[in-house]
Amino acid sequence: MPSLFKRLAAVIALVSLVTLTGCTSKAPETKPAAPAPAPAAPTGPVKGGTLVIGQSADVLTLDPALTTDEASRPVQSLLFNSLVKYNDKMEILPDLAESYNIQDNGLTYIFKLRKGVKFHNGDALKASDVKFSIERMSDPVLKSRWASFFTDVKEVKAVDDTTIQLTLAKPNAAFINAVASYMFIQQESFVKANPSLQRIENGTGPFKFKEWVPNSSITVTRFADGFEQDKVFIDNVTFKVMPEVASRLAALRTGEVQFLEFLEPQFGPQLEQMKTAGNIDFTKVFSNMYHMFGFNTKRAPFDNAKVRQAIQYAVDRDTLLKTAALGQGAVVGILTPALGNWVLPVDKYPEYKRDVAKAKALLKEAGYEKGFEFKIMAPSNYPVDLNSAIALAEQLKEVGITAVVDKTEWGTYVDNWVKRNFDTFVGNNGNGTDPDLAMYAALSTGGSTNAFQYSDKEIDDLLAKGRISADPAARKQVYDTIQQKLVEKGPMVYTFATYAYYAYSPKLQGYKGQVVSPFRNIAYAWIKN
Image (cartoon, rainbow, N blue to C red; front, side, top):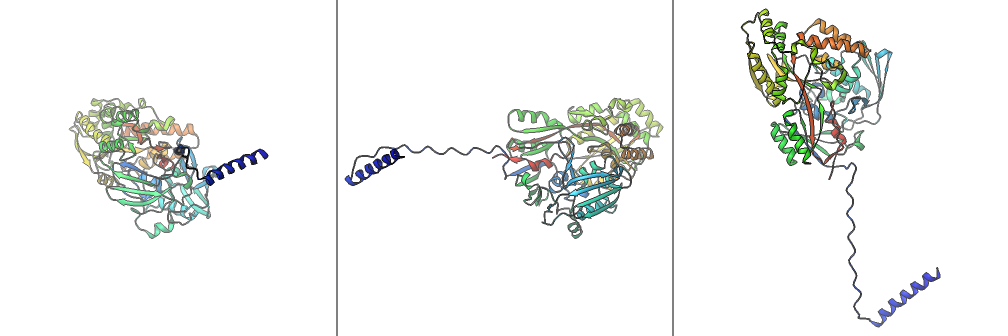
């Protein structure tokens, strides 16, 4: 240390000398300090920002128990939770329930709720709210679209504030799938205090309602007290109504919107080009939604099974796929390839080989040798379905049937569907993750989504058998039989399924698309600065 003291003393002496002698010599030039390096851009999730999503139609309701349209579900998926949920591999994971236990050979389900979960108004979630939500969903007065999935629930019991017990009247192999798909939890006191939940909500989801400008946009904002708050990064999500597909695509290209769902396969090549150019990214999945042509079986002549079968033979599904969807997809039955081994190959359906002579013969047997005229209700905001209706009308002319395409505004289309006010309609239905979810509510007598008003005891018995069987191989045989019989005499013509594209800005990071709930995963993505 002595050497250090000597150096310091010498420096002090030199400074003193310069000061005392009033030295006027020019001080040595010093270079300016180099600027501090800019902080590195964060590589992981960052909080903040607004994500704008383009939608073809306005939301119709915020009440998940009364949803009948495709535009409302994406918003609701950010506002509400179920007891369990799916991951991107369609596996069941905890959601509001931290665990669940199935007992008594599938008759008893016990869910243990997470502690500290809050509704958007700040109140704590209780098991009594879960009990209320399940019983409300099943209430015949409410007429929930999802009621048929919970008809086997015999009793719901709130054991304590964090434990809920469900007892089924009989085993239901698809019940946990139904819970994950359709059981959204709402607060009992809030629902009872508000006769209409169309434009208000009080869920537990990662986002809460902020603003709704009818026919323009709806905005949700991050719920800071949510139980998943550490996993949620985006501040606001705005769903912007943009009816024209070309306008949505242009807005994605310019950055006006940062996320779009494309169910219109004709835009796939453009999305591929935009991705190659680095303008967007996207996730592509085979949709679990099937396109179809449905009949009101309470109206003549569609109350006649031979008329329905004649139309099955009159339709050229391959041409429909090429015409309406540019061949981007596959001809299907009621189950799409997204359901894997449950799907019966279409070569098992004799009706899928077009036979105009057979169709005419069946019409003659049914008493309609000279044909008939009817309307096809088609949604104006879904080009694939509208184009399907136009192509179907052309094909049916060849067997003497005159079909008039009724291009219908979306709100009116949904209202007519709910009220069963149509001759026929084109549209699409979802499979969910199990054949029971695809079939039971839509095809059982009195089913909550049975807009066809279809009733067939043989189908009812098979559907009931498929529900209670715990053996996958036995269930497979049941649903194979159902698929064949539905094409033979059912209430709709299954046409094709397409790919779904979820296209988004490269700035949206961490997004994982999936078949079941593609919008929910937006909650876990973030916007790169």
